[in-house]
Image 1 (cartoon, one colour):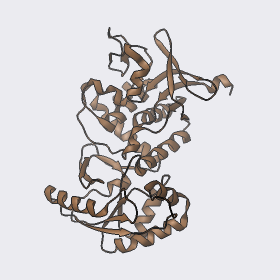
Image 2 (cartoon, helix red, strand yellow):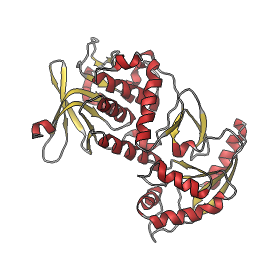
Image 3 (tube, one colour):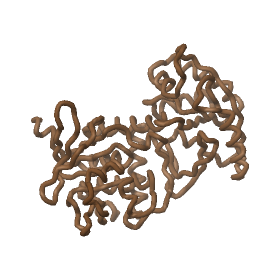
Length: 370
């Protein structure tokens, strides 16, 4: 491959949130050579990537939602971080504030916290971890469960874990140790066993590794004899970072070339086509060329388009004040589309990301007709 070839792609996706990652996966699996360019993590790492069933506008093409969510669910399954649930259903998941969040789909390590029958839950805090108060969470969940008519009971328990003297304890510190230190995993297991004796479910702050997946966490549940539910704490959250790393690994495995840490500073046009992007790399800007471009970096994408952006057409292409497409091969996804009406959140991100990936591959209409 020549240097020129290494900078040329069928599709460039700008932004590594759920919309951008879904678009890159959909296009790659339809045979396109894809580059994913981002300055860092997607916004979903500040939570955990849960999907709520929210109202969508006609422009979003909600009739494709089930197909898009099906693709995303398979994408996460193959990444080792499967989602549970269905877009047509809703469950209540606990939060760090002791409230319940209503979601339709969630990563498996949060989904276990969904309660629909009588469950004995133990909320586990860690001595010295100030970002998670097990007593506060337990009291609030007990009150909220009563208001919702849920029969789950919650009790609090605090455990101690070894940590480096003089270093403030954090979920990130514990997660890194969980990844690399087998002895720490054993210590955590032994510390959790007393809490698991009289519990069907253990709720704890997100700390079970940044690079773990279904196999490792399922093994821990099997060793404890009860389900585990992690709650995202101060952002960026460990569950959110875990999901990002899992999807990033999967994209690289299927052939997506990822350029991370270098923001896109400009779009390049040739007439009515967007022919590439400029990235802010060390020494000198790098020019990446593409047959199509998808903007998936939220409000930042709007700044790349400048004052010419007025709206979007039915194929997710940005339009100017006269209603003309800014570029025939340029698509926008995710949060940038909120001006169309509604706030679809992660649901909209997945739907529009999937649609844009299929549009770039020239296959949206064919797959939608199935």
